[in-house]
Image (cartoon, rainbow, N blue to C red; front, top):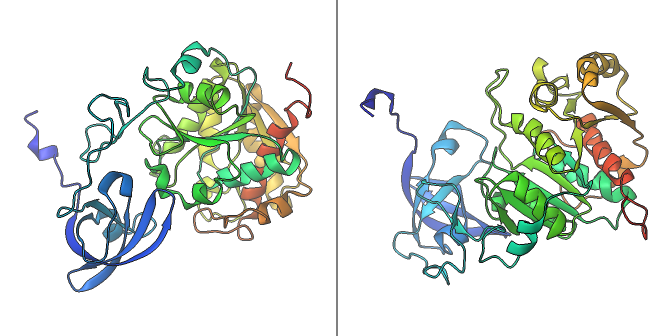
Length: 375
């Protein structure tokens, strides 16, 4: 490339020793690791590096931890160099899959994609051409997922809901304690693009949506990135632009796109107060297909006029739907996970979570009544 002046170190390496195994959730284990003269919290994914034990020497990536970035305060375990895990079964004959994710990084996992010939679902996905009107709720942040789910299940506790995790934030689904807590309420998790670790792996959002509908038999799909939204404070430099692309994918496959709006009464940043510029850009400029954009019917008085003004240009393409929120507060509080967005809980940014739940309620309203069939 002849451009060494453009290369910068990207990983801060450290060696350490596991002092204690703390808590576990699906796909992840939290550790205390001694690094030099201090202890740090570290996170390991056993499917990638093996099962760490006290006394193990570990290699760590501590860059995001040292810089105070949004990794949940963790150093990340790269390897247990003295005790490497065994090769996965079926790896040589490809029966365990040959789809590579986090491609060409040192920890690229090889997974069985739902579309592959070796997949038991290959024929179903290969034959699928339509979502058959499946409501697809799109959201900017991972923190909206449990709130959307609460809105769906508040009115339709029988609904099968699939979550499609895109690759704008965390790549391993295992990083999300939220998904672990919601596992009994979801029909399944589909990790798409470079994301991995779901119940199903899909190469693209399009095939992931088809798998949600025809393999998981979902009644509603929710699409959002994993934890760890990337934003730069610029008009286009944020990972949530993919929300608009998700609207397009749902529409081209014959789904019913529903846009969950990011509305905050507590975010101190002007670009995110009221309707976030993330929603206005993703739905107003990136989404080329029409969606139902959902407004709760009980916005705080100081927000209502500004929200209406902000959404006025979007009405040229989208349908802005006002949804009643009675009962949604109780549904949010009954979730088996603590709600949090940008460090704010349900009471600190009530409007954000209620707006997300309202999008879920709207999706539930589009479902046929129990015992009826769609169409």
